[in-house]
Image 1 (cartoon, one colour):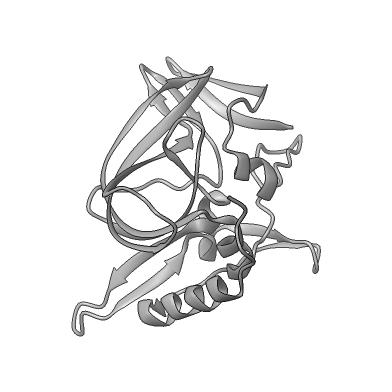
Image 2 (cartoon, one colour):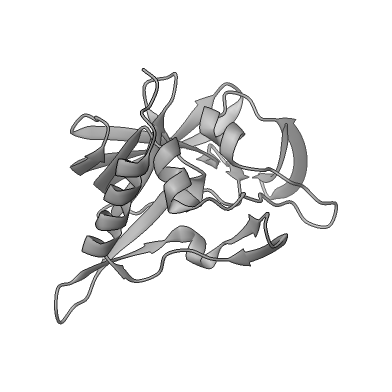
Length: 205
């Protein structure tokens, strides 16, 4: 399986195609990486909330603390730490680290489409899978990322899925278009996740 990305170093733009090494298992199982000659791209296979709930070992509400970047197994990664505020499914420590492909290290920038980025202080709901290195990856990247927004006058909390603004591939319709949860009250979203968890087959130990 190949992934094509844009990498820049010292002002030069390079395009390289490299085998994806040490990738999170769910990224391999649940995302389709398609490349075209016209433009490098990452295309995610659309997943329902039920499918993501089944795939995720851990679902949390968390607040972003900080970001760092570094090399690992020949790839640039961004490591984001989160303060876990609520655990909706599975188990997790009070603070977790999520690793995602891409970032900037010592003048080298690696950009991977479809990978979410986070700002310190923002709150999210994340669908997670543990990695062999003891941190976490996000199920299907932007699809497993839900941003929490507060309505200023009322204080009501709503969630919007990152793929509401990122095109995914719908295999039934054989089309690409942006689709996802948008401005759904957090309580209603949590109820949907709880229903999906009740319907989920038992996970293998």
